[in-house]
Length: 462
Image (cartoon, rainbow, N blue to C red):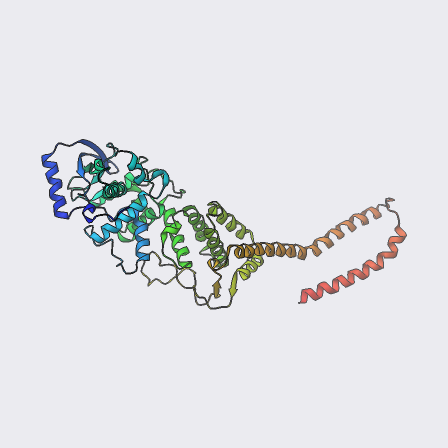
């Protein structure tokens, strides 16, 4: 692919507005398209075949939320408001084209770039632009079409214009957001939205726009989603929090590495949320953190089953005794060493809530200090060996625990058997042989009982 020409990224604002008004006044619509602008309001839009060089991308497009976050994390020379300075920034539009094209070519079965090489554009699925020439729907498809036309105008001349539905001037920014959210559920759109992008959008709406969960549910994009679903806004936010926790643990800020880990983050969040407010479960959390790091790192090799391994590990930890948890904890962590990178949740209210990485700060001062053994620094066999050793230690600990109870249980059983013998002897039972021999070894039994009592008392005192 060749670098995209700047003229292909859309015209300036005044030119766009002027040309759109001219198109509406002078041309007959090529068709109609109906779209919802709110939950109960659907409006007809006029559709025109419009030059692809006219509109610009919508920088607040939900689909590229996580990619924008990752781009800023990897390009520290860019201002944090790089994508928030308005839609007219040519630098931001160029980067946005690259991010959208990554989305368009991400999945083999829905690669728009390859699909449009072989197929004409579906005239029944027009893109949607507002009266200022900003793409509200169709950004990803547009990136693929522009790139094809940029690379080979001769063979893709039919993509020089495509159908676009124009929104009326009175449509608000909130209604534009609703249209995008509503259409993100459209099954005709070939590329699914990445869950992290949707989660980041939900978080920003709650922080920047002060919207509540019910507001978000009622505003489109979550129709029919149950509260227990992994795609419910609360579930998305919980999984996103674990993404931030994981990235903090490995000292990275690139969300791209967790796009395929939605279920893993969700299952992790269920147990983290369950344990977080219980001081007795602090070691459980630290141990599961270590497990998660290892499982995510090796997820591809395990066939993408990390999410089930995380849940199985969490359930197993809940079954462990306090002694077993201590044993695992001591094996996994180097205790009593000052931490190089603490990972316990931060309780400092002075931190900026809008920071997607806030809430993941230092340990409390009174907590036990640990340094986490980073699995990234160990080879795969070394990590597996460590976890195998932990499993063996757990098994040995359970065996020791069983043995500690064995003395009491065996003596209790002997007493019960003696009671049976005594009751039979009271009834003058003739069911016993070798009575004389038994009488002769009774003193030996009495001596053994005295010795046993002596050692039991000594162990009890210690």
